[in-house]
Amino acid sequence: MVLGIANDMLLSVAVLVASGAHILASASEKSGARSELSERKLLGGDPMHASMESNELGMRMMELVNLTNRLEENTEKVKIDAGETIKMKEEKKTKLLDVTQLLEEKKREKVNLDKKISDFAEEVRQIEKEYFALLGKTKELGND
Image 1 (cartoon, rainbow, N blue to C red):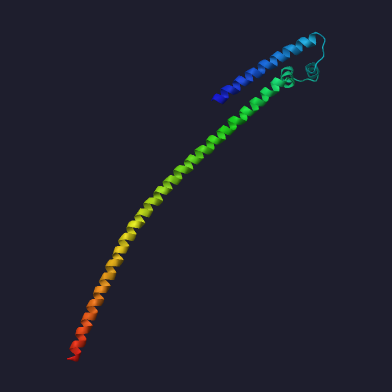
Image 2 (cartoon, one colour):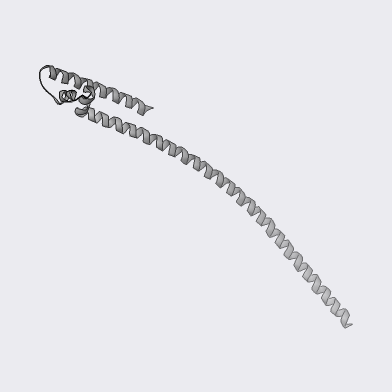
């Protein structure tokens, strides 16, 4: 918005400078002096535009206007890029949250599974102990 206002102000100043140069050129033509502006006029060029082009300040103003326009375009691109970056950042945050939740769930499942494995191993040891106890009794009974 500020750039737009600055752009309008620059154009107003450029038109004012061009008008002043045109008035000076007209005065020079009336006095009989032949200038580059009058030659352009004879060639069919727009006198206001021609005087603005021949005027160093006008050329600088046009350059400033062009640079201002490029700055506005680049600012819009940066805003768009920033918006996309923010959107991507939010998506990454959401994905990170999902992955973190999944990791916590998998950790809980691992703890439960480790407990089940431990309980199963204990049961196997108990069964093995009972087996060997029964095997020992069987051998004693077989020896008697």
